[in-house]
Length: 356
Image (cartoon, rainbow, N blue to C red; front, side, top):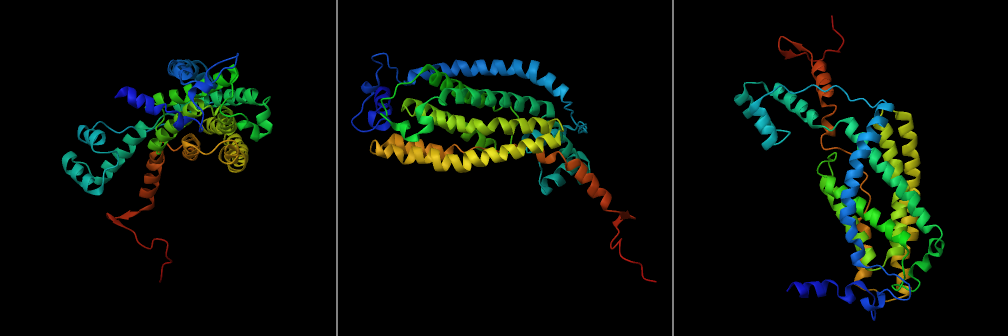
């Protein structure tokens, strides 16, 4: 049974164009070809990335945060309350009106006191600015190094300047060590992000973020297995070209350097528009959709690769799960002040002119 599934999974027709088999991609005459076993190293490398990240955040990002004067805002803590804490952990972080009334009877607190308690409790769970800064610093460092290294890998290749050469002789295209290491390092990094996603700053698009990471890992792995390596290196470098700019803008935003953050974001937006809305559809997608058909008939791998390309869109949200409660306390306080009371009743038409 397992052998049958294994044989079907590696069926030549799924991965390679017609009339080609895996035997055609055996190493020979000093020429090395991409193989699935090459990527086994990515799992231990992902763990190495997690270790490097730990020490980077501790000994590089934390001192850098102090240098940039990253400060955490004072947060009012919710007073201990076993009833409300139990509901918070089991029933939800934002109780409905009916639930607020029930909790009011159980705890002896007013509805407004309960709402205030949940706002402060949500704020307690918000990640600190230091944690956000350290994560952004780590991603900035990797994306910058990956972009520079990626350009060094592909800038001297003829298919960097003539995209038709991406498919010249496909799939019998040998690889060089720099392409191998570029792939394994990128894939290991995304695996490490997937491993650490539960402990990282949680965002509102948490599920979409997981799907994005998984789709990226599948796309990178498949492109290596099917020897779409030339196209894969172009796509990785294109994505990395703007990622480090966004992460640097986040870093300065957390540090309170608003002007620097805004300027970096403008640069990021320009680069993003050029790379993702111009180069990606009119050069890269044209290269992966049109040019291959000049070399071989469409096969499963062709459709799968291009469909995965559509899935791996950049998720640009940086909205943390509890970010919306950051200003709730201040907003609630301001709202309360605006509702002036007289003998327990709101004053209506307070700003209307008085008639004699």
